[in-house]
Length: 132
Image (cartoon, rainbow, N blue to C red; front, side):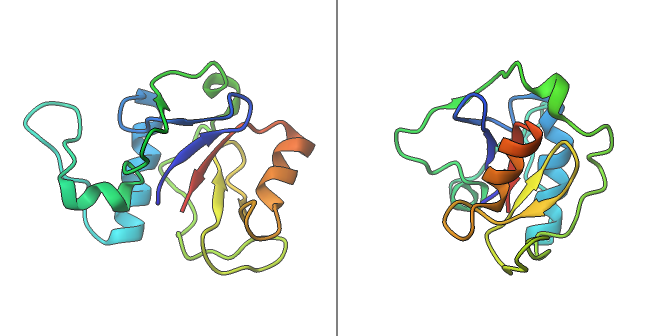
């Protein structure tokens, strides 16, 4: 769903509003959906209603932070090149719904599978991950 989560803040991050996250969000969108993220005439992406579910924006009352102190220490310097969203978990090979560590670019499964991304955060303190 292309949501960005900060384990340290225990919160989702607004990848469209946070400048450091825009490149990885745009790249992952193209890789997952085969088309560019829709833009308006300004610099900020404009999301059409039918795209909201694909972007993870339909989240009810969940608030998406527009800043996070963990981004500086947690982001890889090369987020323009990321693994394909179909990449299986590096530990258990689970094929879907995995997360990409935005620090080291390791792909690991969610807390609903074998919790490998959560374990990765606990072992490495890599705080920020993108959900495919």
